[in-house]
Length: 431
Image (cartoon, rainbow, N blue to C red):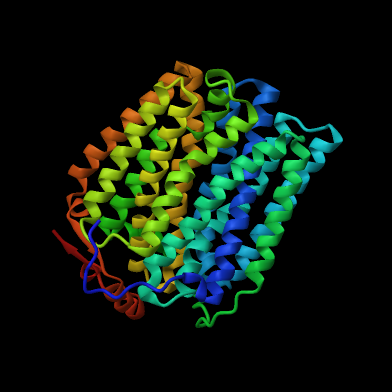
């Protein structure tokens, strides 16, 4: 992770950019709310059913809206005010959390009602996630985009540490308390987004057509480096994700209870936060491709260790390492995608990217639940960790240009973004 000795020291804080500061806190509050709700939903569904398969169904219910709405989401993000889209999505998420709180308080909550609310409300994060990605480059000068992405990751990871632990603590007072708190935080995040004031050229509202809808997919297909990076994340995390099974580990294997579940869910974010803080100040400048592949291998090894562990402390440690490795891939991939994409297409490209992320996370949870139902919990996680390493080996052969990337160059990326044309080859230097 070498850095250039001739480059100037980075400014002490990205929060000096007021629009980004509002965004950063909104990102944090929204992520905390999402994590609190995730802990509550996972624990409540498992308490109602005792089945890991239903935990997988929760992931599927979150994934389907994102998958079905991908093309429409990107088009909306490129045609309308991205700040307003994010605000409306967070309001919808707040109302959904309030509905879950009401159902728990009234006593009519069931596994079916939870799945229905999660599925309907899934349309909000489906619109919100890619719009947030596309919004970040407009909040800071172009050369600061990689650092802004790392700061955004730090907000998310801070929330991922605090949110699950807070969710587990709140759940000891009942699911109503947890859901109500999540609702308030979602609405607070929406209010912070409303404070953002930025200048942006009016979006080009080209007529809706099949060509415009599929523009993001075509762009990614024509960029082998971007395609390789996001598909690596898709298949690696699809196989290696074990978060859906954490309630089973917490209750049946590690015997840790709701508070233990919160700590387990927070553990990956501890490692991720430490690394994202480092990247926010000293972004990786060389051997980008090698670092990315190496990080995914470490992710797979940590998953294997977690699968076989019966020690709560060792399991926490494995998850910390897992999160640290994962955030390196996330920051590199996110920076790469945003730097290489013209602003007028960032919504559509980010929508496709978010669909890949959603697939690797939510559909990965469904895969974990289904595999656990077929083979058992420990074999399911073990198979996923081994599969992740196999994917890395295959991708190094399928996308040698990705392995050969040496550095990201924000200055070159700025010229590409401003011109809105080119094949993107000048943004990178190969080793």
